[in-house]
Image (cartoon, rainbow, N blue to C red; front, top):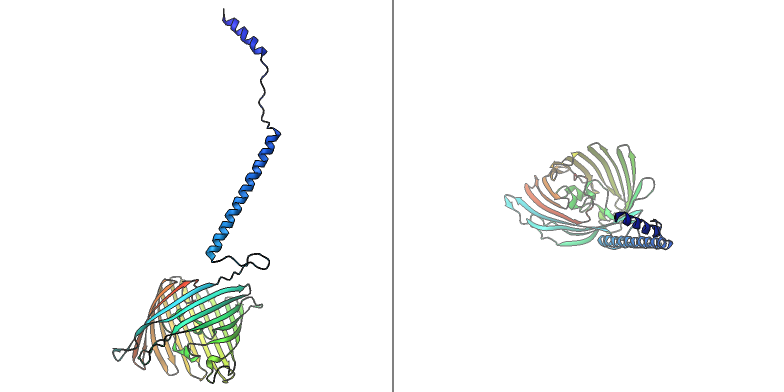
Length: 389
């Protein structure tokens, strides 16, 4: 009785209500402008944050490098900042001599050399190097003289011209001359504890002179031919005083790689115009390297001094393991064998090497033994090619 009346009343009330407002997704124009402004502000903030992070990264990188690059004249960072690579070498030696069954009085330990090697690219066309050496002469094993202490000198100071045309390169300054194989090698880089006596036929401690050389490299398939000529002061050969006359140097070297085998043959000559004499040399190198754990190296040189004296050496080095090298060297002169030498080297890493060596002099019937500790820190230039890596 009451339900039909309630339904009729509800329908009548609903008919009097205004129609509902339709739902729409449209946004007022003011809201569109605010949203675009907000997006622009967010993009600006993100760009500013990215720029700040990039600047911080560059500051950290330049701090790690030592200093920020120097600006060029155009205001852009220089590609060649004056921040050279610096390497220090220390070579410590202990020597023991035995003669007539007794230890000789010159048996001792000493720091043979300390070297500071500084290298940098000058510009895209040249590289420079300076080697400062602090060296101590080995005390005579017979005890005839005490050690003279350290002497300091710029052992090398030169610039390499690396971008000359026609496969040419040049070097100007004071440097170990490209005469033979071992004359260019510093004592701490030799494959032995001492240098062959034949190197003294060139000059005291090898031929190191001031001047300029020009080299021409001709690649012929797997073989490279290098022809070098130079004009030098000739001072290491002079006995009548400095600047008595210039010297001219020439060298021809053929070096080739054939799979795991490398072979080189060279001939060298230096003529001193003031003395009217020349020193000559021939050399041979062979390396067999089937892997980084095994290698065999053969080296030989024959030298003739300005005075006509002959001398040389022949050496064999075998690598039985990754870090171990066993070597033998025969020193000789025109009369025959001068000394028989054995060497054993162990590398804990490329920065630290331990080596022992010994020699027997058949003429004096004397034995000497050397223990060598060589360590490197700093920028570490590449090792000699007879180190298998």
